Image (cartoon, rainbow, N blue to C red; front, top):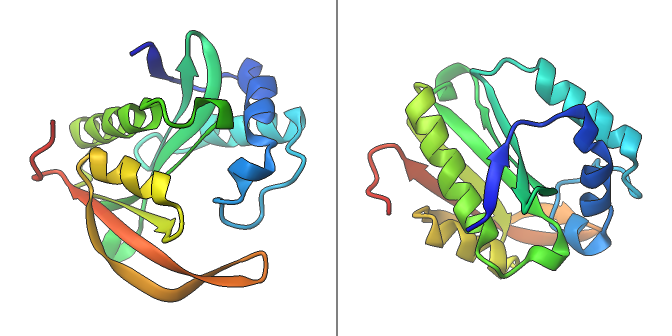
Length: 172
């Protein structure tokens, strides 16, 4: 598959803004992301990533035939959860359903487990987001449970599913 994780560069900001400034993509995000998402928003995000501690934030652009089409990150938790990390990702709408995100999730998890002391990666997704749930399952994540009436988005309350992948889990 020609998708690849690549380090973010400030020159990727316009493609980041193009792929993320879509209501269908943003409906699955946590609150706080600007809409429309501008090139300056992209530069600010990329600058934040580039200045982050590389042992705590693992963030990559998802490139497909050289074009930035998404983002994926694993962020270390703190205190008693310091060996755990949270996975987050998105993909431009026109690339949904092609297996790109499943491959990106596998790649970043392999990278984090090989290059850090993190032993657990977890991900939360809206229960209604069947595509994201399927990505996680195909990447080897296990459903740990449903957090009932845990999230609110656009004034509606939703269940959240919690998934995890352990460094010791068998993966393809």
